[in-house]
Every structure is written in C-alpha cells, then in structure tokens.
Image (tube, rainbow, N blue to C red; front, side, top):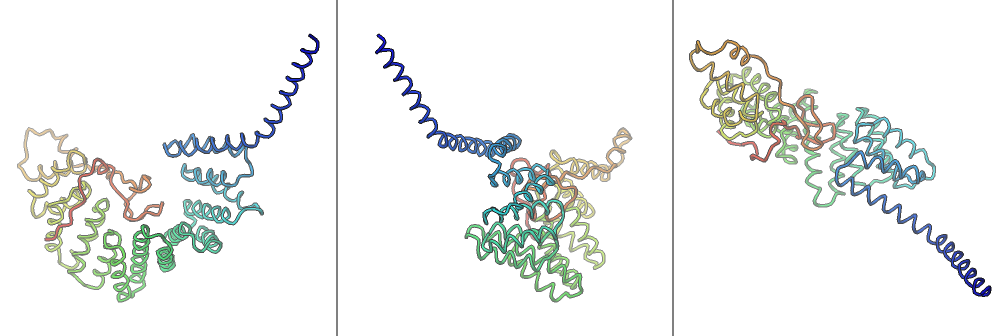
Length: 395
C-alpha cells in the first residue's frame, strides 16, 4: 500500500512539474495570442464605428505594452479624430523622442504630428513636419498627399501643385484621378493669386489648365468666372458663373450674389437671368433652388414659385420664399393674419452646412473643408435619399 501511495505521489509530482514546464514554455505563445485577440477586438470595434471603446482598448494595450510605438500612434490618430488635438500632438512628440524608433514609425509619427498641427491651423509647422517625413520616405503616397493638403491650407499653391504632380506619378492607377483633381485646385489657387497680383494673362493660362485637370469642380469654375470677369470676357464669365453655382449648390447664395454684382456693373443682368432660369428648370438641391428663385422671380414669378414648391417640403428657406412670393403676387388678403405676414417677412437662419467627406459642420460656405476635401459642402436638408445631381442645363 505504501508503495502504491509513493508511486501516485511521484506521478502527481511528475505531472505537476510537467504542467509547470508546459505552462512556462507556452506562456509567450499564450501572451501573443492574447495580444492578437485584443488587437482583433480593436479592429472589429473600429469597423463598427465604436470610437470610444476603441480608445479604451488602445489605452489598455498601451499600459500592457508601453514599448509598442504603433499603439501610441494609433491612439494619437484616434485622439485627433475625437478633437483631442493637444493630446494627440503630445503622444506623437513622445513617440518621436525615442532614439530607437524604426524609420517607418518615425515617418508615421511625423505625418501624424503634421496632421495635428494642420488641425490646429499651424500650417507652417505642419509643412515643416511633413517635409521632414517626405525626406525620410520620398515615395510615400500618403505623406505626399498630407503635404499637398498642408501646402494648400498655407496658400503655397505652386508647391502644392508640385506635390500633387509628384503624387500622381507615384500613386496607383485608381488614385491618379484624385491627384489630378488636387492639382487642378492648386493651379486654380495659383490663377487667383496671379489675378490678385495684377497678371491677368498668367491667371487666364493657369485657370485653363486647372479646368483641364478638374473640369467638374465648382471651385475651379468660380476661379474661371473671376478671371474671365476681370478680363472683360462676358460670355465666358456668364458660362463660368452658371457652371459654378450648378456644381456648388451649397454656395449658390454667395455665388449668385457675386455674379449679380458683376452683371450689374457690366449691364448683363438679362443674360445672367437667362442662365439662372435655365439652371432653375432642373435644379434639385434646395439651396440652389432658393438662391436662383430669389433672382428669377423678378422676371418669371411663376417659374420661381414652381421651383420653390418642388423643394419646399424639405427646405424651410424654400417654403418661406414661396410664401413671400405668393404674398407679393396676389392682392393683399384682409383675412390673412398680420402675424403670418410679419413671420413671412422675417429672415430665416441659413441651412446648416456639413462636409460631405468628414461630416464636420461648416460655419459658412467654403470650397475647402479643414479635412482637406474640396467641393464638399452640402446642406443638411439635401442629405436625404439621392434625388439626382444638380441640373447643368444651358439656355
């Protein structure tokens, strides 16, 4: 009996030692599997759009693996996306302070820092960080794109155009169109700068090149209209204004006002109204309809009323414009409550604009969002199910 107990004890002891050895040998593998599982969970939550949980997971991973720079770079990028730009900048600088950082991670850190600085409006410092990143990775398409956007924001149009041209040479075929469009915007910026400097001939050449690169851009067509107006090319300016407001409906109020001011100086109101009527026949964007109807009502109130009625159900501005137009058309109805008339005559808050690319609100219309996207402004009321693109009719 004692021998049996001794054998069992020896077996148990041997089994314990074996289990301990197995645990010791498998521990690194198990930790690696756990790390992969955590990262897989992060990727899944990021795909689901659960940014807050992703940030919490990354912070936990950073505590367990404080020497993994990729985790801190990811956390910094997420912080910038959540609006915590100062913390993102601090994380990027902490990563970059490491003397043993791998070259590709140093490039990623510099790009991230450049984007942080750009988000804060510090364009010059952003350009410096991104230029340094390009010097370390001269064939990085993503870094070139960030540099081009920083140069655009800084108003360095010539350098931005050069960066986009280099981007086009290095980018895969599916992204070269984006490169050409980006260069078109930069060249349009050069054209307006030349116009401001008093060189209309150079401005004209540059804007023609910009149209070749980005023929469907409201920003580029607006540049063409301004250059043509300055050169006294009346027909070119009329066509360009029409293309501009059709391609940038969210900015139609500002564009039609600028075009109308030019037309009054040139005595071209009738020609401009013909263009406006042609656009109004097929326009679907409520911002464009409301802006055009305000001008067209002077010549053809019935057409203006029909166009406003098309979009009044989704646009407070169009509905109010329709009420005002009907009040102006018909005889004053004595039974109509005076308060209704007063309400109809009050100003209405302009529609909220957002960036179609990043969904950030835009305080006022602009052709470029701070995220770097061009021609992206859209009225929230026009973001429902697709109703077709703005009309591009010709008179």
